[in-house]
Length: 220
Image 1 (cartoon, rainbow, N blue to C red):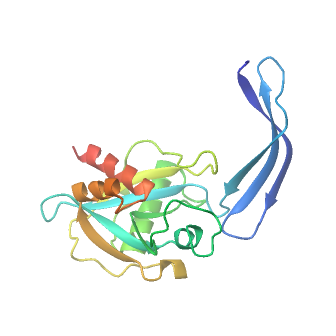
Image 2 (image 1 turned 30 degrees about the horizontal axis):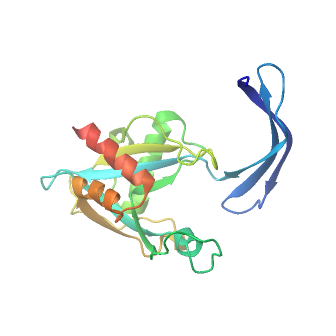
């Protein structure tokens, strides 16, 4: 079979515009190197109009000895309602995930350009979700970005870390005023324990596990 040289778009429409996510529905054909084409097929993908990429921040401290990381228990309605409750879709488990532990993260916005923009957004998210004031220059990029669900969305995670010297002096988080932020609480956990919690299932967030493991490699 000849290799695929590109894609041809037959139709392109957006469904559900005006919300947090939009479905982009395309009818495509694969164009092969020999000039032949595949049959027409449907391809759905998600778009996030306010910003496609996201930054993940491992806030850590060495002030009390062993490396500790800050976890945030946040509200994730999609896990509560999408894995049981009102969802008709069968899933393997329906455990309570009303409080979902993860690292600080946020959407990269239009003004956040390049590595400087990623660091800038990371610092803003630390203040908004954790309360600590950190300098963008102190934010470390933990390697290349990563695509979490390439078959569904073109979102890229940018994994970062920043150290705080005085973890006990945590101001109240600024928040963004959204009900999605309501009730969020943060707590410190030793880095090794946090990684072990990812393996055991106490922490189930993929972006957090990947960032924690990269932080461990970075510090070693």
